[in-house]
Length: 296
Image (tube, rainbow, N blue to C red; front, side):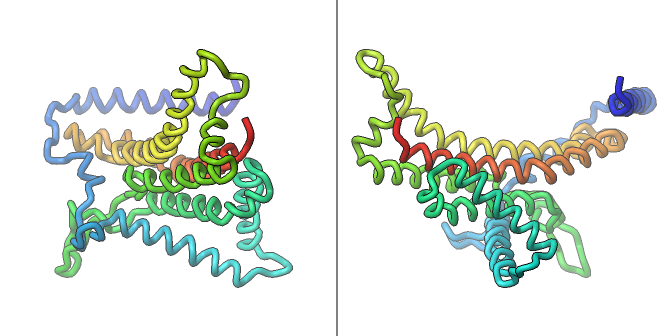
């Protein structure tokens, strides 16, 4: 058994022992807190009611992500040097990731030159949206605190990408883009024919053709649900482990046991999931664009 395995096993045994001790000392509470509702942590309350243009915290998070995407890239572009500093080196590595891995790795060079601005902006926008979602900001209108007489919304973790409408709109843009490229490259009828795998003919075509068409529309759902579900699930786990479970069960002592788990999940989500989901969304968009113009 390796040293790392022994350490992890010791930590696991320690946590189990602590949990058993806490249960033995305080018992399992049957008093549940019905006032606290988890779904309210993701509820959108209009701060400015303007019909379809109403402003809530999801809109604010989208504005922040858009501003960061534009400002940081413009700021870096205006300060490029022949001898790059650490910031420029990191940006160049990120640029290479977007250009070579996401874009050129999944389509021809001519198509990559055309769609790189979109795919790069898509990756950065989703990445910033995810990262902002792990920063505690005063955006929870359900709970407020008093600061020198002013009622300030309490700090909360919220991500615009945890609202299904945001990933859906981004997925719709990609869906329209790759279908448009496919029709432009093959023609409307030729594009529909290109969806059918090579060599399929005869009676089996009646079964395969509808499945391939449905699978094309399923790309819209897969893009949307993958981003939405991962970010929402991560935030809910952090919420539960950081104290939500203890509040619901009415067992405050449980928070001492779950808080370290919540911190670990938070670090994991911030360090990996936020970037990974942006990368997957942009990469799949590039794959769909590339396959739309290719032959069978």
